[in-house]
Structure formats: structure tokens, C-alpha cells
Length: 285
Length: 346
Image 1 (cartoon, chains in turn red, blue):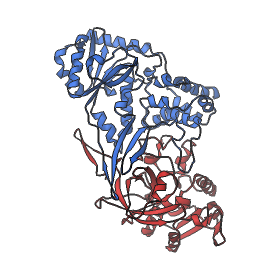
Image 2 (cartoon, rainbow over the protein chains, first blue to last red):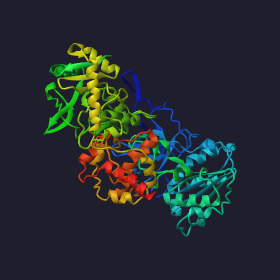
Image 3 (cartoon, chains in turn yellow, purple):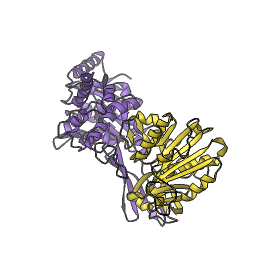
Image 4 (tube, chains in turn yellow, cyan):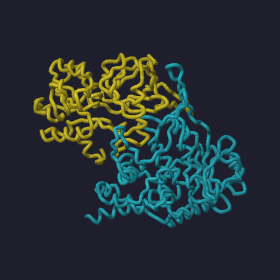
């Protein structure tokens, strides 16, 4: 897919380290420190295909690269979207970009959510904070092929009402057929009339069924810990709880060693793992 | 092809022939220490050295290299890069270091081929030198990565010092092409010469000062991950990274940009899992917050995770990590100690 062929002693090598140049065509400020960028590749002939849950390496030339999960669904290909929280040097620069600026994109990398395993199943999506971003790719993918999946329940928690991302989509998703959205915040505000508490406190209200249901979850490690504990207590099999892992990454292609845990490289073997797979990895999460 | 003897009186001629179409890298004396460097004349080659402090694998995976240069043009960026395709010959590379390259190949091939590494690798001829006297920290015979070398190890030629002459064994087509070019410099080796080589190999192996028994090691480590043993062992580690930098099999790297005004480059350089920020996440969470976890990661990656993933440990027994450690951490003792911990528990 990468169009950087090199002639080398008769063999053609591709250079996976060279990013594609993309232009920022849309910017939406989601919260105080999270923004969503719409991107279009400058090479219009580039066939950038990906699966929900895969990630890209985003280059800000002169600052470096960061791995970011794709937020848009491959079923909507006019642009690709990424949601970025302002954390360090590169993400800080991403927050300074304006429409028309160019950045670099390598990828897509990683395994992505197991969408084929979800066909015919009920899907319970549980997200926390910016963790809703790679889940959004999946939710839009499911909704665009609505007949292939059972009921969809989306549980989403953030620190405060101001930290909820994709507010416009949360409303829209709730209006889709057989789809319910439940939101909660850790700390409410006077204007907030929704649920206050951690995301596991939504379990009862959401009336979760275990049978024929697969859970897809992404969020901070502490949330994942209590969500999986709660789900296993309810009777979910550890193979039906699926999560995306965050690790320090540099290359994204299984070489640099930064994301190694156990015999796995999160960038190529993950970032998506079943809870059973995670249990078998060293406790260094 | 039949093995050859090249009399030492003609070895300069042999090297000169190698220099015709490749940059020859060989051990030379730098400040009293042997170091692999590009040579300008055959006389520079230092034959009577032990293992070099730095492995010649740095000519395949250099300490740092440019991945690409970028230049801003308006809002657009122009990217250019260079793939190193200089023909090189590493002369006198030791069997352990040859074996380390075969291990690195597994990492840099795979689904995403690394063109920088693989191009250098493909353009490099390896003329190995069998070890007759192992160094004081060597334990290569524990891995079968030395002191001799078989055809599968990946060297093109193997030299064995027989005193008056070098015995030359051909392993690859590329090695054969070289020997055809220098045919006039050598004489066919006899079966007596071959026997002498075998005797020397057995002798060198029996003189190996240290051994690491790998039997049951990954299983023992599997039981020991949470053990206080790693607290105790890691207490004296300074996390200086010398062991990982000098290890010919350690390949972890960092990637960063350098930039001045509108142009710059993306660079990769060696990194070390023993450094504190190696696994640090952008939010401040560190899955390996202390030296205990990072030292443990180094040992587990090499001797458990790699065996599970590749089928072999990421170690060739060269002993450089022992030689370089400022606090005398001894990888053989640490691993043998780990095994005996499990035995004690049982």
C-alpha cells in the first residue's frame, strides 16, 4: 500500500518509515483539551483502507510522531478523522494546527476490533474519556451495517460534562434503531441532569444481557480494571471482553521494542486483546 | 567448493582484492583496544585480538541514522531519504557476532521490512574468524553460537588461524565468488588441515570459561516474575544502559526529529529498555516505574519472551555485558540464580 518502492539488489523494498502527507480539512474542538481533525491525503490516488480499531502514526515534522487510534469508520471514506488529547510536545502542536496545514500519516497499524466476531451478536460498548475515540470508529461501522448486528448499548463516562467527547454523536447514536446510549460523569455540574458516578454504576440501568453479547471497551487502565472485574462477576467469559491497550510506541511496526509486553508487541499483535489474552501477559499494565 | 589454505604471507594480497569492490571493515587497534573500523590498507588489521568492545553489528544497525529529511515548502512538506547500498566486507567478525545478525534479521524482516537495515545487510559480506581461545567472559558454547561456526550461521567465509596459514571454509555463493577471484593466492586444503580445524574447535569449546544451562530457564522465569529475587538482583543496577548498548542482539531504538527552521530530519538511535522513560506513557503512567521492572524486562525479553516468540534467546554469549558493567552484574550468575530460586521453592 505504501508507495515508496526501492530497488535493492533486485528486490523491491518498501519503506514503512515514510509518512504520507495529509492536509487538515476540518477541526472540531471536542473539549478543553481534545480536538478532532478531519484529514485528506494529498495523494488523491492513495487507497487508504483500514479496519475499526487500527491506529496511525501521526507526524508533526520537527516535533516527532505519536500513535493515535483512528476515530472515523472505514465505511465513511471522504476523510479520515483522529481525536487528539493535548498531552505532550507532538499533541500540543496538533492543537495549534489550522485548516490547510499539513501533517504526516503512516499506517494503518495494529489488528483492530474483531468485527467479524461481532456479526449476529449484541454489542456492549464501554468507553472512558478519550477512549471513546477508537470506539467511535467501531460504532459508526456497526451502525452503517445495522442489519448485521444485534442490539448496541453504549456506556460512556468522563470526568465532567465538559470532558464528554462527540456530544452531537452521542445524541444521534441514541436515535438509531436498537441502540441505546448511557452517559455518566465523575463530577457533575449544576446544568448536568444525567448520571453521576463511575461507568460501572451504569451496568444496572443499562439492563445488560450476557447471552450472545460481546463487550468492547477502551479507557484509562483504572476503568478497564473495574469494568472487567464487574463484567466477569456478572458472568461474562473473558474471551467476550475485548479491550484496546495503550503502550509507549515509537515505530508502530514491531521493530523498536518500546511496546513489548510478554511475547507480544502491542503495535503489531494488538492493540486489541481479549481479556483472556491480557490475563496471560505480565502484570505490567 | 573445496576448502583453501591461504598462507599468511599472501593475506595482504587477499585483503587488497576484497578492497577492490567493497569497503573492508576489520579489527584495528584504537588506543590499545581492538575496534572494527573501515581500513585503508591491509597492514592495519589487528589479528591477535579478543572480542572487540563494540560489536561490528554497528555497521548494519548503526548507533544513529537518518530515516528521512524533510523540508517545508509553504504548507507542504518534501520528504527525501537515502538507503545505504555501499558494498562492505566485515573481515574477522567473530562467530557470536555473526549469529547475532541472524537474530536481528528476524526482527527487521517480517510483515514490515526495514529497508535501512536490510539494504546494509544485503550489501555486507561476512568473513568470520573462528575463535581459538575464548575470552574470560565468553559463554557462546551454551547457545551454539561459537566458538566455531556452521554454514547456517550466515557467514560467507570462515577463516581459521592454523599458524602459518589461514584455513578458509566457504559457506555461500558470495563466499565462493570471492575464493574464485583469489584462487591463485591459495592452495587446496587437505584432510589433515580439516582435522586440525576440528581439533581446534573442540579445544576452544572445552576452554570456555563459563556456561549457562538454558534447560528449564524460561519455565523457571515464568514462575519467578513477581518474585522478590528481582528486587534483590536489580538493587545494584545503575540503569546506565552499557549492557544493552554493547549487546550485539539488543536492537531497541528511539525515533525523534531534529529541526532548524523549515528543514530537519527524522533520526533513529539505539535505546535501552533499562532507561527509566522507555515505557513511560504520555499521561505520566509508567508501567515499569523502577530499575527493578526495567532490569527484569531486559532479562525476560531476552530469555523468556524471545524464546516464546522466536524460539531462541536473544543472547549469543559474547560476554560484553559482563565486561562493560560498572557494578559487575553477571548475566550468567543472575540467570543461574533465578533457576536455583525456583528449585529452592519446589
